Image (tube, rainbow, N blue to C red; front, side, top):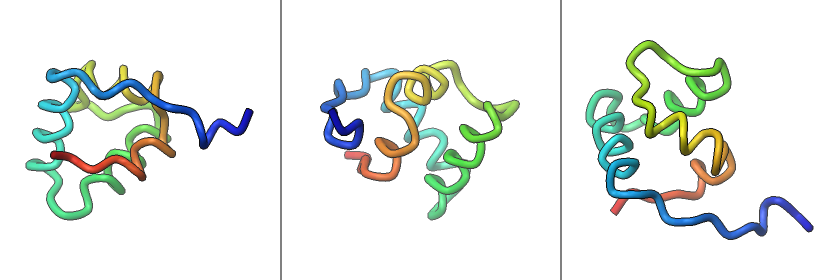
Length: 68
């Protein structure tokens, strides 16, 4: 099975809130910043909900995801 074709569960409300907060802190290029944080195993200000998404969904999901 191609991992890029996998269906992922929708982020929880807490995970969406963490993504929104991260976007607010990092601006227009928030995904690039978060991806870089994920690739270096986190950042000091990274919330646990973002680590959960990194572990369960991964970078390819992040690049395709759009915040509501």
